Image 1 (cartoon, rainbow, N blue to C red):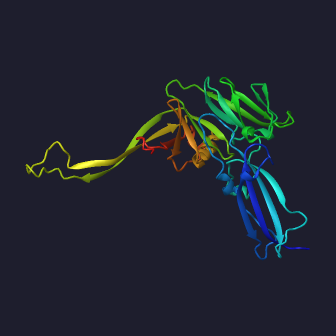
Image 2: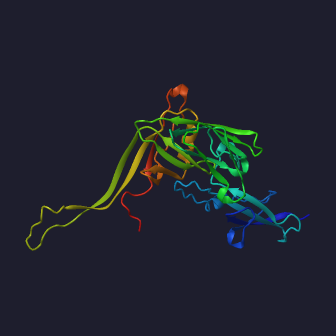
Image 3: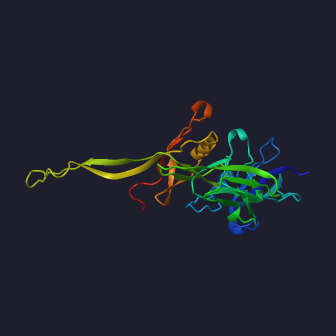
Length: 329
């Protein structure tokens, strides 16, 4: 019986339906030899695939998934391809999610509702979005009104963002059998007469866009950077200098704006939302009727509980991810 000695892997990354790829979708060709003493050959492909998952959010909630087809050819110690069991072809649906260390290698993320909590905070008379994976959900009932979920296998609808009505208070998500309840999600409506709520959207651990609102005080700030040089203002003809011209001049003046936001009073489950927000590489804020990219400046958090903190409020600082002066060239 031949012994596995080498594997050659071809990775196809594409949109559309599973298996519907062409030679132009070939993104990587990899080859590895079996390490002595081991019986298999391992390829780590997650970071390679992630390069092709572009997050381009403009308040539009588009499904960001790709199909990945891995074709592996197996060879023996003489360089001869196995006549049986080679090549091996596997199809995967790729989302830009992640697991935690304590969940072990290749953890199984949610394959139905793509958020980690069962309570959403929305302003009064404001609609919301619930991300689901279409292949794992049969129907969604919002205030007992059913929405049937269909999955045609195309990447452009694998993640679906179910509209939550402006007055809805509950969501029940059912399995593909349309009878087994997967999740009961409560919608808590917040009346905020004094402050302007701000919506922040981020890519959560399940690879979906998740909205969260900050209901309380917002504080804007701006930090300015510059450089200076000392100029010679002496007029050599009159041997004098004008006092209206500065001896020091500024250049490379730039500024960054930041905003500090407060969630308002939330329960302990919101710790998980804050955790995923701070770990996200892609965050946006709805600001003055525009969707703008921001970066969380807050780099630490305290896991608050009702027992320890009584009333729970989270304060998060964000920096706008661009210069105040337009310096795009």
